Image 1 (spheres, rainbow, N blue to C red):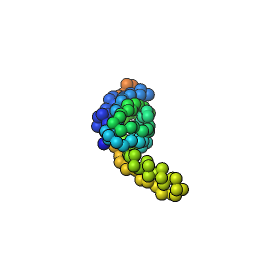
Image 2: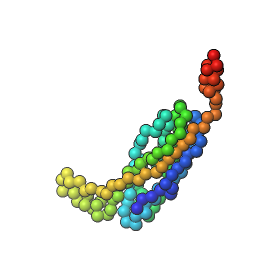
Image 3: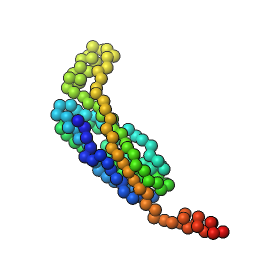
Image 4: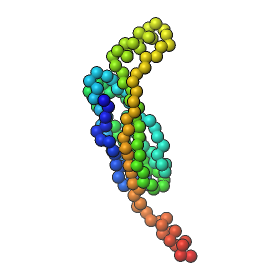
Length: 143
């Protein structure tokens, strides 16, 4: 009952030190349960970094939020395609009341919430804007 507005985000051709921004909408399609979400930080290759705003939050039933995704390329140009993961925790009114009752009797009983994972595919291509390194290799190979 949770979904993104798209299954795949293409950050396009990115040059070194030129961040690329995209937006995705996260939907809570459940008519009765509140949803908590949390981006599971992952290591990208070549030192690339992915920043999300917000990284975590809550969505009321039948609501949505915009998530800004900023990809900052690392020092070395590379192409990649992969998935990032969001954890989703569902909380119903009954689970909340049961948790409140469990706390009121001072027990250590945990009332489990239903959890799941949601994935979104991302891809990026390196944009080479300088050929200084290639020229240097060519010069060295001619010697």
